[in-house]
Image (cartoon, one colour):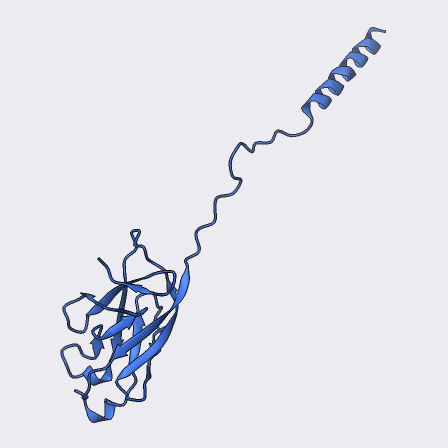
Length: 166
C-alpha cells in the first residue's frame, strides 16, 4: 500500500510540474529579434552637361571622337559617351544610379570629370572638370593640380540636383 501511495504521490508531482512548466523557456527578451537591415543607398538620375572649347588642340584624326563622362561612383567600364548638340560644342547625357550624398553627413563629394578629345595634346591630356555641369550645377570646386588628375567635386541631392561643397 505504501508503494501505491508513493506512486500516486510521484504521479501527482509529475503532473503538477508538467502543468506549471507549460513548455520550453522563451529566451526572447524585449527588443527586436533580428538586426535592422542596412540602409539601401538612394539612387537618382542626374543630368550632365559639358561645354567643349571651340577649336581642337589635338591631332585632326582625333577631333571627331566623342566626349566621355566619368564619376567616382561608377565601376570601371561604367563611364558613358555624351551626345553632341547640333552646334557641336555642347555635350549632354544622363548618369543613372548616382548615390545621393547630400546633405553631407560624413560622405565625400563625388569626383567627376570628362575626357575631351579636343584637349589630348594639352597639359590635361584630355581630362577636364572645367565647363562641366552635373545636376544643373556648374562645378566650382576642384581637386588635383589642374592636370590630368583634375576632378570636380559635387554632392547630389535626392532630386538629382548638384550641390557644390561649401
